[in-house]
Length: 303
Image (cartoon, rainbow, N blue to C red; front, side, top):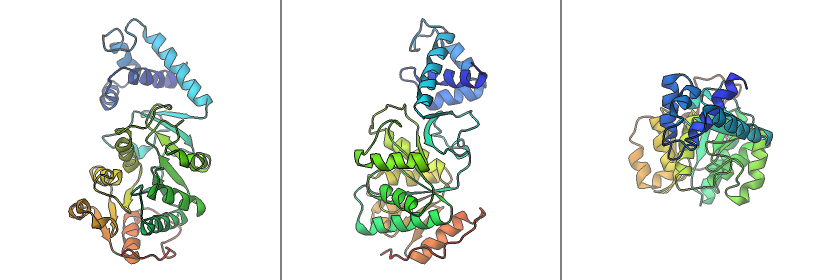
């Protein structure tokens, strides 16, 4: 077993411990410079999953698990691997382990488009327009594969021939919502599907806010189309600012009390029409080279 696999397997073994804090484990590995060194120190303590096993046994078992995932077409990326997305390394909620299907890129110029599951007709139209233009400009459209705004954004990006990334709140072998099974498989074929959860993990109340943190970290900015008081998109807007990413709020979402209060923060763009939305997106992306502008952005009303 080569060193890279040994380290990756040691990380999996560490994360398999009961009640383990994944963020603290990542920090411990960073401080020690080796997942295996942390595992060596931990084996035999009462909080390990198999206190009587040796480090070698744990690593061999984890390596077998990794090989099984890879045989199923699942990419397995530790935070210290060269394949791990660079933009996630700087966020507090960085997943120590990331699972993928599709084309994972070290650097990906991406904008998140998020909003309500129970979207209005106006919200769906806006989401599709934003995603269509971003895709046409060569910008990756990121969303969470939920019903409503997320589905509209992913679908529009694909229809425009662009790249889309789905950051999901379940294990990568799961389909949630079930109605998006075909869309999820298509994104895995032509774009990218990523998850921070064990491949067979079911959805939970905690998994979706955690997914929003990763989606925010992956993107250079977040566009919130519609979001109620308890929406995951609201959580993502807050996290995005914590990550130093700009947030764009449409006038649709400004009908909510949380959005009006949130709009006072630096780094938040409030757009009231097509021209302002164009200007906000252009301003956010202006530091990066691009072959096409936003002149052909579909005309829609943000009333």
